[in-house]
Image (cartoon, rainbow, N blue to C red; front, side, top):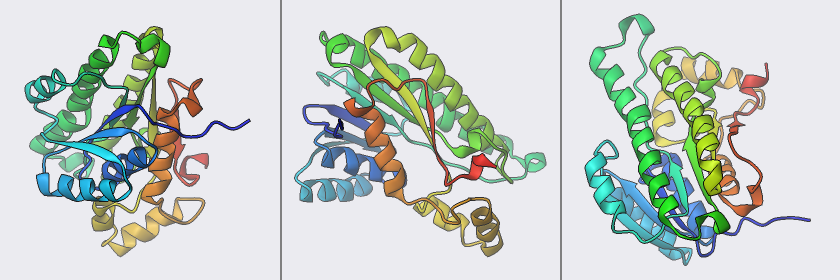
Length: 254
């Protein structure tokens, strides 16, 4: 037997949805039938995503918001009747050598990649639990992590810390939300061909070194990750929770 990825009659929220993995995930969930709430700081990026979703006959609502603004996000979610799916994706990196990490950069990455991710997960979980039929229909959360939660990386000590924390949060959330039939997993990609990674890959030596660490000798595509996310939020993965799913081309197999 085979369970299809079918998100019809589901309401999903994707943070960091204006570009990169968030954009790819938003489009994938819409293509699978979900009504998608897309959140980003940049309205013009959201407008582009909405146009793409409309072309696929999908449905979306945009909300311009910095996810570090808990009050604004809480007020917005208070007006939503129902939420079934969260893709907790917003995040970034500022590569620096461990001995030279600037205090302001470390605090920025912790605020966005960890504190805001926690806030978004908590607020959205509370919204999911409010729905009277939650235990019957279930819910799903995917926290966007990284292979860097499992291995060290040059110039990525703060990011290593951030993403290891996200994987830990995922397991804790899975434990406490299971009684509401809300599943929680993380996806841990390798380097993906997103606008952010393409900037990093301008350093040819860094790109060469990076690809050499991937067993399949290629960076991931955005669709590799968005498909994994769609699977994890759909009923096709109804018995999977508390898992950190690696989409790393074999990097961590060594």
